[in-house]
Image (cartoon, rainbow, N blue to C red; front, top):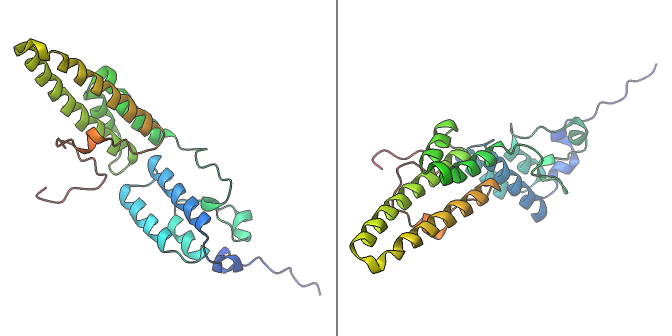
Length: 214
């Protein structure tokens, strides 16, 4: 009687899953999670949770749990205990550019629409996503720079020798807007020195819900 061929063991039982995580694997895993956040596939809270899991992971099985529900593992990879989220030579930017595109648009749209462009992006994106947070940052920055421009125009009108202040503020606005848009479009945080000291926070740009009373 012919005996049936033994079935492949489940991926969770594969011996390679008990191997210790290497620094290279952990770095690639963190890069994958950060890119997933930049693309809007996970929220800031999910990013924090999954990054924590990845940093605390000792084995490949532990590390795989950081990608539960996020990464689809092909059967061929599962059969040998491999995981595409931290495999070498993975093209992290092959898909899902929508989130970064929306984030970049939030900044660049201010060149033509002022704070209205970021406000539209903020309203159109989901809370907790990279694009939503970058739209809030851009909106807050545009409001602050608009106030600064009005102040510069008033100062220039009163004290003629200081009329150059308007040009300085205008140049700062252009640089901050373009640099912020370029960074956001590439999936990077758009924070600069000027945005970090901006006291105006009309929109929540932390990516997390504000606590009551704040």
